[in-house]
Length: 263
Ligand code: V07
Image: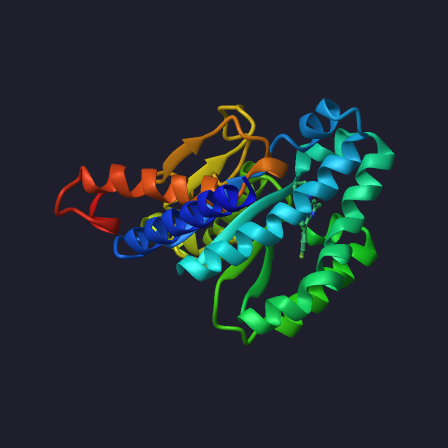
């Protein structure tokens, strides 16, 4: 019985390995963006407090980060805290604001080992100072790393980001350093917090919600969207591989048109 189970397990791993090899031979998304939903629901199903779900979700962040890095994804943006999340109970917010510190205390050595670079988008100023310190320290320590960019969206809202970009351009026009005719997509892009990142080509949202919720509205203009009912704490390598396989299937339908030419 045990031997039979082990044989099955070995076969599963072999199958996963074969899928990974096949996927690696095709176009890997440059930049994957994920809305990590369903942590509260995961906890509720187990009669546990919501924060237990958030904590479990953090383990998924580690697993998916390592897997994306191994697959050759260049950037992974994770929506960790939205500007809307401030409406949650105080105790839940306090818990969430401790997660970056806990995550980084535990995984920073592993991130260094794997060459992963930590970055952040969103309004850092509004975060508690201990949260800001933990993130800044990790960004500083990993800034020379050449592997995956692990980009956390924290206190991020896409419309606020766009308002900020527009104000900057308006001021430059008012001061005479920018001409209205010079405003184009490239310039707008350069004013966004994602300016240095490749455009996201795949968006994943877990837990069955089918909305963008003010996440990278400009940047996701040409991305493939994948929605799954799987709750974020249950999301695993198999799910992520499935998402890349679906992405590649959709992209192949464009025949010779690949990547940026697709638009
Ligand atoms: C958070 C765990 C994942 C599911 C979604 C909500 C809860 C990792 C971080 C993090 C953020 C910045 C950083 C390092 C780690 C995080 C929050 C919530 C607020 F530099 N997970 N995670 N931050 N959750």
